[in-house]
Length: 179
Image 1 (cartoon, rainbow, N blue to C red):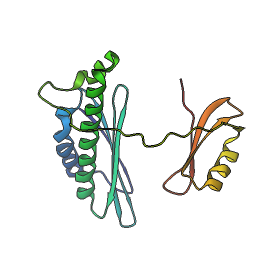
Image 2: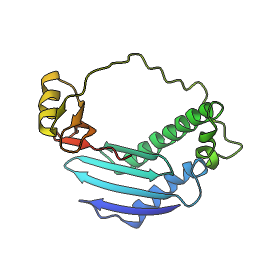
Image 3: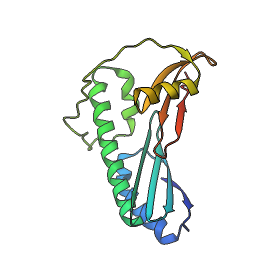
């Protein structure tokens, strides 16, 4: 694995790097060879945040945890990543029997590793609605009126389906899918 470390309001020391590498190596056997791991450390006021991003062929694994201690944040972020990987592999393993195209994504799964059993996705409700052409600002206003955290709309300028969403810091984001 190749590591890239960044720090915001913190000096990334060798001991901090070593601790992160040791913890992330715990999930090394679950990942493909030569994967790149991006680790970011951020400190703001009393909050120590560890963020790990691992881009794979068709997916990106990402987790972030903020606690009062950086070592605790590193431990918890690796726990989250391990759960994500097991859940992801379980879903792919179940789909593999229905669709041969998923076999390629499972290529990095070691033979002795069994995916998490009993992972079921239950879609409880399906909702259909008409998409009205609008600009992103109008979509944000519509989202606010509905009291939702995201809103799907037809972007009149780009003539594509887009999503606006509320970010954790109170600002808004726009998702423009590429096909």
